[in-house]
Image 1 (cartoon, rainbow, N blue to C red):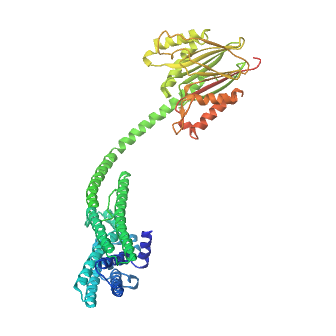
Image 2 (image 1 turned 90 degrees about the vertical axis):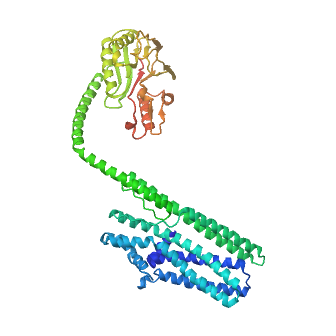
Image 3 (image 1 turned 180 degrees about the horizontal axis):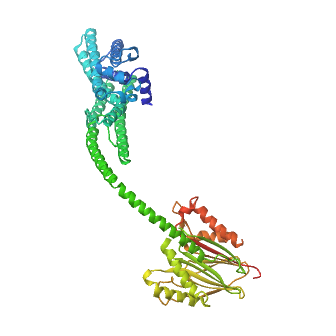
Length: 580
């Protein structure tokens, strides 16, 4: 809001004139602050008070007019200020000329404009004190000739000096507040031209804090004197308190704003450095602490940029080598991708394709490897009429390693798949993995199930496989594992479980990839979700139940579920047909 108002006066008057408008507005408040000092120690009659106040107002208005004229109040009418430095600022800041045309302006001119802008706060301070001193002199002379009392003249001078301290200090702060962003922009232009400039520090936060404490203490003393003089009107006391709050509040606001803007500039410079930019920090204000920090920080930044440039040169020297290496790796990648595609086709061929010839069962199968190839494998075939054998295995791991293990599993299973006893079949495969593939550290979980449609029974053995689901007469039964993983321990025995089956019974066989998926909120799709879905849709056909579970999992993972899959997924849905 304040900066918008400043921009308005900047466009209507001039840059230095806009600065003067804000600083002289404060002078008017500060002059009445000095007036209250005189009022607190000198007893005036109403007539004397009005006279003193009239003269003070007239002198202050005249001083403000001279101050504004000094800084280019009439710039638009051809008079840009009393001094060359003010005229230079108003000329090159007219409608932002120096920033829109800086490429055509010589280095020396930009340096000179920056120098006078950097000194503007000090110059404004001295000009404000000078015009305030003129007001004090006039007030002292008028007071002497009007009252002929030396003590009144003395207190008028002391009050004027007190007011001039406040005026000068706040004039410097306010000037810095408005010129800070423009100084930074000029420093950036000079830095781009490899011109280093140093700014002078004027005050430190320690001195500013001491001045505020001095002002607060002085205000308390004046207020105490006003209260002790009972003849002072309550309105005068309240007015003094109000002016004191405005004064102290403005000073605190300016200090806090100085810190806030400077820290924001430091943060911006650090982000710029981190993103690969120059990262230089140009302090908008001339506080000692930020000036020291700026010198040390910029030295470090220049060293970092030098190291970065040296690193870029080294990287450039290695570009050809890296390009050649990349081309070699890319060639290898294309070869690997060709091999993976072949492996994918091979793995697809070893899975059973035509299951329509299996009578008595409705089958729904979902096979989705996490990568092009996966670590899940299944087999379904008719051992003899009315007797179907189903095998589902999950090799430990993912990708190529797991896929190679599935090839071994398939080869070993094919050797013994026609053995009548599923217990003996699993024990033979386990022994084979222990004896032949022990050094590969290859092991897997599996479930082997025989569905006997004539006797209406199922027999299964599970080697470390997750619990499976059997829906029988609208009741959910859990098919738990009956032994260790294949390839873990020699002489492992696998228990066979036998259960009755009925028409429309449904069996869900799946690998752990179905319930070990996580969405982007790290929430898991668990066995509990699967059981709840089965409870709701247990009376539905196996195709509908099967599709409901898969759809629910995809919805849980979100739109990008294909990228969220973290394990191979296989699910086999089995339904006992009627009259089978």
